[in-house]
Length: 176
Image (cartoon, rainbow, N blue to C red; front, side, top):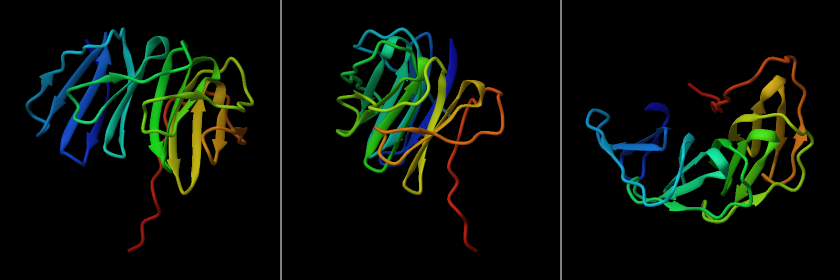
C-alpha cells in the first residue's frame, strides 16, 4: 500500500489518508489510524481534500467519492472516466483535475460533477488545483498553468517553465 495524500477535517477533528490500491485510513489524533471499509468499488486514489464539512477523494477511472464523517463514503456522479489526480474546494464549489486536461466541477458539495465548459489545452495531465483570493489555479504536465474564476471557464496563464508542475498551494498574505 502506498499512501498518497492526507486532509484534515477541522469540522470534526478527523484526519483522512488515501492511497493505492484503494485505501482510506482515518484518525482522530494523528497517532492511531483505522482502515475504512469501502462500500463503493474503487481501484486507486490520487488525492483527498476537505471543505464545506466534507471530504472528497479522487482517483483512477474518474473516481470521485465523498464523505461527511471520513468513514462512510458515497460515489459522486461524474461525467468522466479519465483518471482524476487533484481536487480542492473553494468559493462554494469543488474542482477536480486529471489526465488529458480534464476538469470537473461540483456546485452541490461534491455529489454531482460536470465537465468544465472551456479548457484551452488538450492532452496535458493536470496534477493539482487550488483556490485562493477568488481564483482557481490548476498546474500540470509541461509547465501548463490554467486559471478560472468560476471552475467552468478556464484560460491559460503564463508559465516560465516546461517542467512538470506537480503541486500548487495558496498561502494567504500574513499581516503582523
